[in-house]
Length: 453
Picture 1 (cartoon, rainbow, N blue to C red):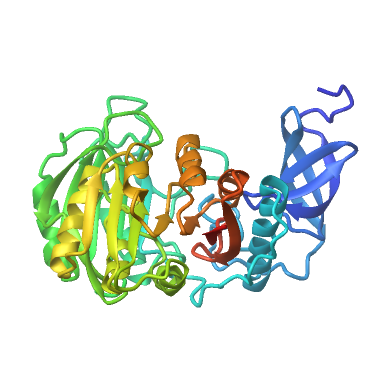
Picture 2 (cartoon, rainbow, N blue to C red):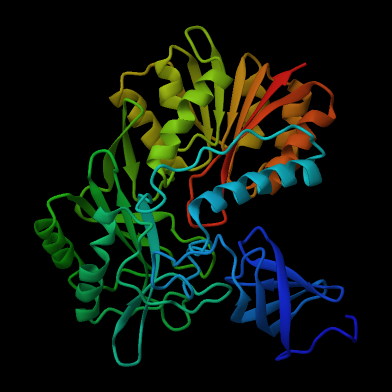
């Protein structure tokens, strides 16, 4: 490290020129890049150096000497402490412009593409949109229960009783559930620092049906009278259709474990999505922004030319969120998904909606993709944030499906994978459409469309 690099505790004045992918302000002091939570482009801030890395500094924002005209008062009183949202202090229009530019820069810098990105589809509801939350829990030495998301860059919980990005029908449950859990003598040990216990509270809502599912995540079942409390919640809230206990005894970043018990009601809720009825379980994936996911669907149908006679593969299909509406156009769809519970629900959802043209396989995508694509006209990809394995990219580049639609929540891994697709010279990137699924955060969803040359 350069000996001229400022030492820890040094006070600096920094001009902020941009935002990084986590929404932190970016500036410079000499040759050193400085990341500052809560600072915006165009601002001059006073900071204190808190961390020195090889190529950058992380500094604490102490005061703002020059304000950005795009700064606003955050809608949440915890915004300057909670790490759940990183952009609440930036006006909604400016958030949308920054996300569009982030996608454009990733495609050019990482992927080498000069394609102009389409204007972002901003969310009509920038608050109250989330249909799911998984909230860490801890108990103080005095026995008080704390529930909240972590402070940025730490495992320190910021205690909360409400969250304005949650759908209000979930938001209103946080405080009374906290109060009830506090009255129990259950151990609470989110990080498994002791002998384990309750770790997270998960809330899930069918935005178009109003059905609610509560899931307690614990390292063990030693929670006395858990069924009694679950039944009491079922009686108190008519919209509540089930209370579950998910067991996650491993100290890992994976929030949910492989086993879920039903304490009361049922282990799934019903949602209406794009004219289909979907059964969504406590431990299965569904897009957190229902309204924006429904806006994405017509774009997918157009990109894949979904209609009677079209043969499609939906890789990382989950519970059939997109497979079923695609099949409803008359297309035949093969869904690939490694999570057995999701495949079980996808099959149940296809049966519920009378869609016989859907077939779901419980398998690793990398293992099954080549055979699945043998007779396919189009491929839908909706992988986790880390993107695709190199073997999957190689298969797609080699087989070159006539149409490819790639849904991604990470512009960097999207650009990387698209470059691998096109490197073989058989696929061409046609368009990239950003869609804001995650207002108030630095995340953005994209749909990339490719065609065979």
